[in-house]
Image 1: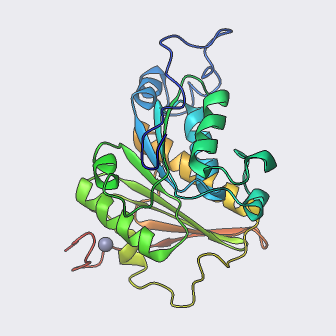
Image 2: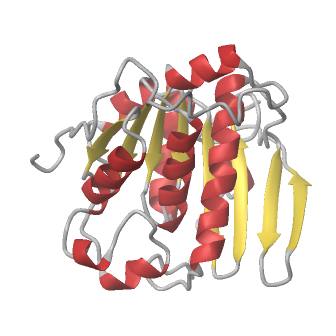
Length: 258
Ligand SMILES: [Zn+2]
């Protein structure tokens, strides 16, 4: 696959894996029946970033039965990534992150179609991908790409789950019109943010990714209550979690809420 080309990692078989339906233990959860399981199978989720956060989000979206995952992430795996990667091994260092993640997901979940794109968020293919998605998980690690995805998702009318972490802290917001978007809550980039220098504990990144996957499943099925209009803030060193009510900002340049 050339840079920017789509790489279906696995074709989705028409039948359930042998040994019974792998969703038996989740169908029957409140709001999640056979119909909702079919909605998941027919859904496309874009996961922007397959680092510690996005890798976990992609894993648990696939585990839940999302039929098509589109993974976006530019660049190759480096050894310091491995404190938070469960889809990649030391043998994968130097190879494409996104293609490695797609290969591993294809082995674990052969009934899920995975498309891997080794492209930056500013690539020309991204807006069209977002328009065809049912949910977007934003797991990027820098403000310019978050703002770009935020704006593109609102234009496309697709809900996004923004999952962020720094050190031992995490934040989660589900952005869905007419509720507040990420820029309504964070109107300006942190001038001190160093996208390649912040500390990462793998368990914190993985927790943020799992929370994002749960939000994606709820958005796709209508089960439960999503985090729209609420920002979840967690500190895993203190093991404290709280939600803060947030509002759409009139005149927000990204969502234009009024
Ligand atoms: Zn906004």
